Amino acid sequence: DSTIRNPILQLHNSQDTLRKLSVEWADTDCDLGVLYKECYPNVKTLTLASNELPYTMHYARAYPNLSELTLDVATRELAELGRGIDSFVDHRYVNKLEQMQHGKWERLTAVHGTLIDHFLLGLLCEVEQVHINGNFMDKRMFRSVLSTTRPKYVNFQGFDVDLFFEGEF
Image 1 (tube, rainbow, N blue to C red):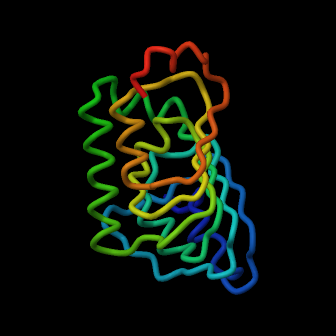
Image 2 (cartoon, one colour; image 1 turned 180 degrees about the horizontal axis):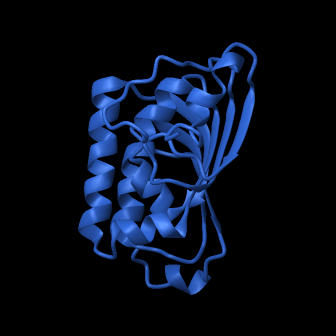
């Protein structure tokens, strides 16, 4: 069954009661173009570990009142996307376009993930706290994330501080 790893569909009986969700290896892209009717209005915290490439519009529609999102895109998924920056830019573009067409969050309190996770999400809402972990840094990706999320607080975890001494950020 292609929906077995899809928490949006599998937990449909908990739409009115679920408040926090933590899932490993979720797959919400089981049917391209699907607009889920399932909605979990009470979910405030969502953790997606070893996840598929993010489909932001699916999460925003299913969890409209979300406050905190933690995303960890699986290495195998990133490998399938490819090494070139163009494939990352394309995925981000699609996420942004789908949010404009089908729904986005107005605001999130905190989002946690690597810079690539943040970039691929393509969030179009204000994020009060952006938490970036890992040691990968790309100026263009970083600036793109900041320009659309407009955070008040940025937290770097696992970075070499020498990265910032050149004054490029």
